[in-house]
Length: 65
Image 1 (spheres, rainbow, N blue to C red):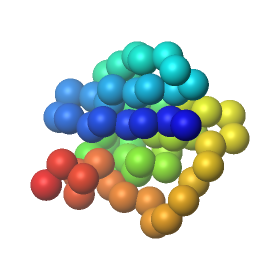
Image 2 (image 1 turned 180 degrees about the horizontal axis):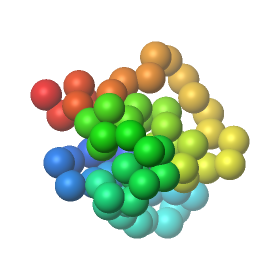
Image 3 (image 1 turned 180 degrees about the vertical axis):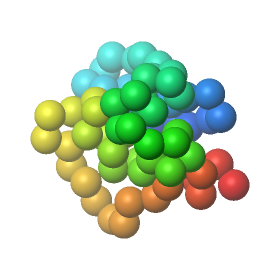
């Protein structure tokens, strides 16, 4: 299971029992989008090769509102 916790500067991730941080700049570089326009599904795709994408994707900007 993968857990994502978003804030204004990046995402705290727990992936297969390992905790790490994805900084805003890294996410923007990987997606070629503004951090607030990236979706939670896109972040999951950075973390996992074949993520379990459930529900509708949500923009980070909407999650942080």
